[in-house]
Length: 175
Image (cartoon, rainbow, N blue to C red; front, side):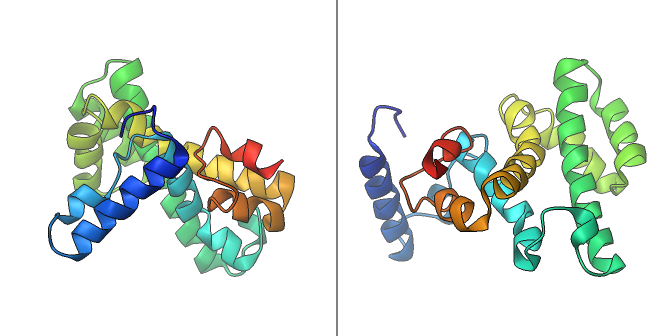
């Protein structure tokens, strides 16, 4: 959507798109915004922090049970693999093959996942440069907002109760 639209106009446009999807006039892909956006970074952070919010904690060690901690850590390792794939390919100029081998070893992802991250996703000129790092940054941002402002203030702002927000504007909505 054009940047010159107001928040109201963007929300209205998104509502129209959703309506067209529910009436079978648009495919599912038309309903989702590009995942390499500032909004997607915040949304990925909210999704990745959901376990923390569900248990009312802000740190891995505060989660109950070793299995839950392990599951969260494995998810975070996959996000680290996404971030590392992006960095290795775009900042260091590494090949897809070298990147896949490295993130497979360092981040414990399957060979299939490492290949996907190092080639189709990581090598994409937009997704690879922007989307892959957004997972890790989004989680760090959301956990920081929760620690700094508390759940009662941060959650409504993150869910756009005070106006549409993204990873850059959400802190202003909390204040």
